[in-house]
Image (tube, rainbow, N blue to C red):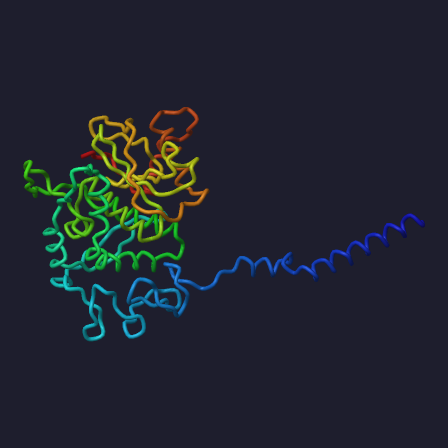
Length: 347
């Protein structure tokens, strides 16, 4: 009987000590754990509520980036005319509709583009002058294509639209990737004359959107631009032997393409992020070692994404693995989820 009383006393003493500990250190309580996880209200670009974004003239208002010229002003590349910011290239407006697929659902974004801007970009020199001791590089031309400031001025409203669609950075990346993948694959018949001869004309990101077509290198530049402006670390993989370009988005090393630190993202058509085992027209597969062109440093995709698992499943389906049950059913489910196509092109 005495032993039982001692046990009861020890039990109550233990409860009292735990209660005292929780009172002294409130961060262990359920409510305080919620407070630890709670975030300051921000918009999709990370701007605090009622604060001007670094992208002018946008103000973060109740979770949405809205134009507030009177509060945030215009950028250095545009002027305030009648309460709106205007670029010198903002003439001949034309509304386009961009398709994307998110969470198995096909959606659309309406976006206004400008004929004057497309005309300006077409006149931008594709030539880079080098000194005798300098060696021309593909990276220089790719960065020139992506980093044009006048182009950025009229593409940033599209970035803002994506940021307003989702506060979550991964969802934003998915939208950007899907938008570019769903732009039709096609080439222009324009050419450029150099001293050494005539070469094919290469579209800038703005032109790919305006004319609603592009080959893999052109679409890769557009996707790289969008992901860079969304804050991601971005690269471009150039496979010289197969003459193909895709985008790399920063991700955990173990998930990345050949340990590069960047996940493989096909740009020619709808595909699963990290799916690098696509077979292209003519039975071509990407087997060579690519040149990695770093576009920007930034954040990474997280450790856990459904795409990692889905890309592995897709590879097993292609290889005819007997570990995959109901292959046709699973393939059709993935096809619908990502809007997958039958054929992928290389340049």
